[in-house]
Length: 80
Length: 223
Image 1 (cartoon, chains in turn green, orange):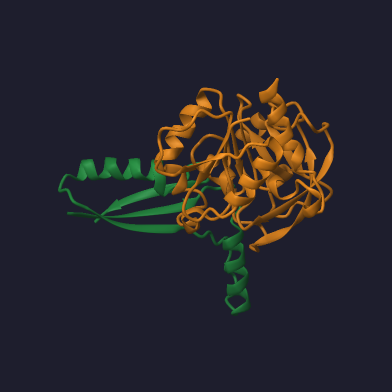
Image 2 (cartoon, helix red, strand yellow):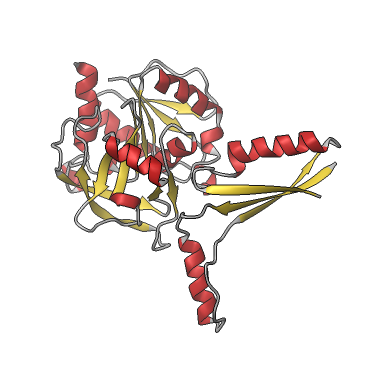
């Protein structure tokens, strides 16, 4: 079994109203100098294979087909 | 006009859409469940609004991968008209049938109110009952209607007349780029929009500005 983590983040140039709101909330908690917060998603997956190349190829396909919307999001794949 | 309304878990505007199509075309639409792959022979397929799959992952993302969407893609390629309203618009974008994406409203608030729409292209099969530049009233109800496309895509759809509806007179409720409320595909048979024309079709709704969209399709089919 291979464990993997997929991280999905917004592309540069895509506005992130949620990140802006979080930035404002941190400011109101007194954390100063926090800028440019971008909210993303993390997926932890377990794959029933020992073939790392296949796992990576499958994960890439999963990202392109479902986990990320590549119109607005980038993704990175990390195998444990 | 023969029409079909798609049903998925979490869609909740299907009954409004069925009522509107029945009243305007005189024929009740058939309903199609998400697992169906053999679609009936119809002139118009409608994906109504709601919260399919609880908006999990991204609005419309799970619904867009259901078997029925492959069948709808094939129908769209064959020229059948497809309309997506609200969540239906989000599903069409996630399925890659329309360009762009819909993000969380810039206010971060769910908006449920009436807006004004400018008919930016009155030459489509969905808008010929209107005049170009005409301002119509229409209700909106959504949390993720903030239209985004990269600069290249935006220039392309603006240049091709694919922007069909815009929020008018300062009523943009969600931060959409260029006030975009509805877009059509290059071929002109797949339309998606955030507002709900099916909820403004008769006096009991307080107006009938939304009727023209369905009447346009009806006219095209009858011709």
